Amino acid sequence: LDDQLTETRDANKKAEAKLERQRQKLKDARAANIAEAKAALSPDVISTAHHQMGRLSKSSEHLMQRLSESGAVEEAQERQLQQLLKAVEMEEKMADEAE
Image (cartoon, rainbow, N blue to C red):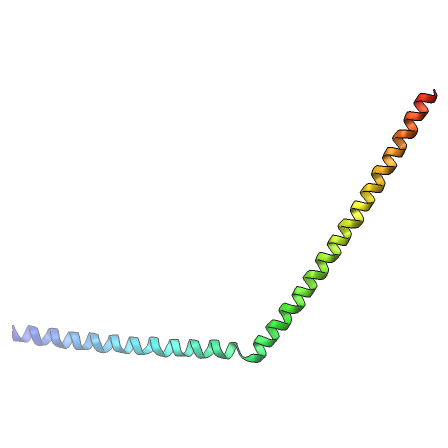
């Protein structure tokens, strides 16, 4: 019984040591990940990202403005087309009445 108890204690100690090594590896990996993330977020990287976001925003605004202008042009053309259609219909109507 004492031998079994000793074996169990030894096995537990080995398992605890292994677990502690794994915990330390996790801590080291986490620290490395944090350091890598901080390096990736250096002021230059952040500045460049902000600059690119600003350019994209301006480009998007310009595109939306052009699209809305295009829509306004299309609406004006549609109105002119409708007016022409009405004028043609009126002329046809007047021609029919004249006959």
